Every structure is written in C-alpha cells, then in structure tokens.
Length: 125
Image 1 (cartoon, one colour):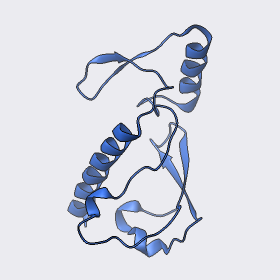
Image 2: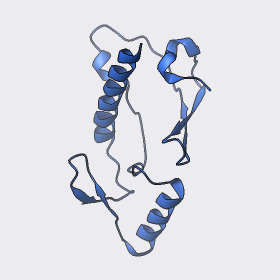
Image 3: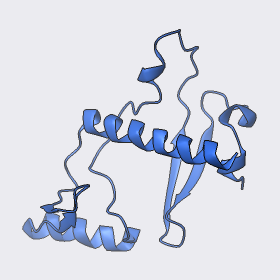
C-alpha cells in the first residue's frame, strides 16, 4: 500500500498492462482494478485532453452505500423497473438508473474530480 498524497504516478514506474488496485470509500467495500492501457507523450497544448476515460458501462456507484446495497438496487431495477431516488450534485432528488452511461459526462466529471484532487494534493505538499 502507498500513500497517494505522497506518491507521484511517475514514481510507480508503470508500464502498459500494469494494474492498480484501488479501494474507494474505506470501510464500504468498494475495490477497483484500473489497467494502464498505454503511455504516450503529451504534445504541447494537449494537456486539457488528459486524463480521460476511454470506455465504460453503467452509471457508476451511489455515494455512501455498499456494493451489496447497490447489488440489491440493480436486482430490484431489473425485476420490476424500480429506480431509487438519489441526490444529484445540486442536492435535488432524481431517479438513478444504473444502466445509463455517458462517456462525455463521465469524462467531464472525472476531469473536475482530478482537478479537485490535484488542488488538495498540492496544498498538502
């Protein structure tokens, strides 16, 4: 295990095909495997394109629930179409359908989260 606040990705000396195991929301049981597909040199002026998600399926997870609770929601949705209500980023209650996926939204959200993590990281260093 490494402390992500004290480690730069370049220090890991990753190569294409390497995988990272990440635990999210400690204690809730969310674990992810992320595979590094390729490493390419960033050309000057293209930095806004990176990092990005290349593919995906499904809407993702709901904050503050366990994988088992999400599995129950998925099972209920598949069985009778019941969609849970969750708070969106504006604290409005909205229907949440795990089957929806938008690569555009995923990347926009991901880039914003990376910027927030970068700001927090740079304040710690």
